[in-house]
Image (cartoon, rainbow, N blue to C red; front, side, top):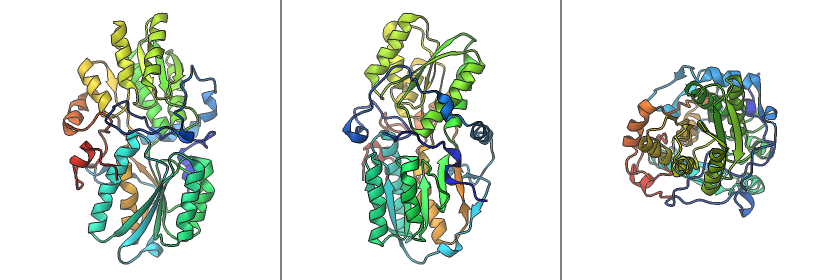
Length: 409
């Protein structure tokens, strides 16, 4: 029995308003509000119990996958995968350049913008080699109904040789993905999952529980029982984000770490206020984030208060890496591998050639440690603060200019 596409994700209980990773506070990066035209409002400590998002079996699987052996060349992590069930695509082989239709949730934040640039540079290579004729793209701007209409448009148009879908949310997109599958054309789902196993492959990094385990274990190892951690969360209802916190909350509890969590709405002003208020109550020893947005604002709040800098986890966004290096704080940069944006097109290259591909294509998800930080900063010299260190596009046309200039196709 084939594993379902949603096997790594809990069903989303609320529509995801933003992407899985953070928005940058860097003014050089174009940002858009969430669904409905409004940014998610910041709020005080969350009230929804994280137990509704906790799945012990998935937690255990992702914990083990952090140390798994990945097939493929480590120099090309976007093509690596964990050995498992493979899909035979011989009946999907095609001659000549093929048209790809891409239904994208959005490019509403720098993580998605970085990936979108990388994806388009990968597309140029495949067009030059005669694999892809064009990629027609529709951007749903973080709206479920828009994305459903986009997918149905592609199906009705009838000119797509293959579909790539980055779902805005899990449950709402499932019927539309199934309709795409019913065309008999290859369907690649990536980033977030849906509640069907009909797609040719589902591509994603290990997942939210792995992020939560990496970060909470790091903080617990560098803190003492009874120390206080402030958890800064972007918004509720996004499966991978909720899983990050569910794993972290479990580990903090097991290690006697006092953790309080807040939804910030990705607002640096609100982040500073939260940290300042908590510092007024007493010492804050650690900061945990479910995405890197606002990491610099959090650090600046400690600096403004003249307080000792915390042990902290951020993300591989350049703003955090640079501030981490500047301050010398004890830190870790978890990743939700941005290079995954290359993989869907490369998967279709294999499909058009009739090669087998992983049914569930699990990509490496390795945090950046202090020992590696300087190398990643050097490798990404000249990139804006909203760029992601593990974007995986160093070998693509246009490097480094299109990423430096944020040339959004």
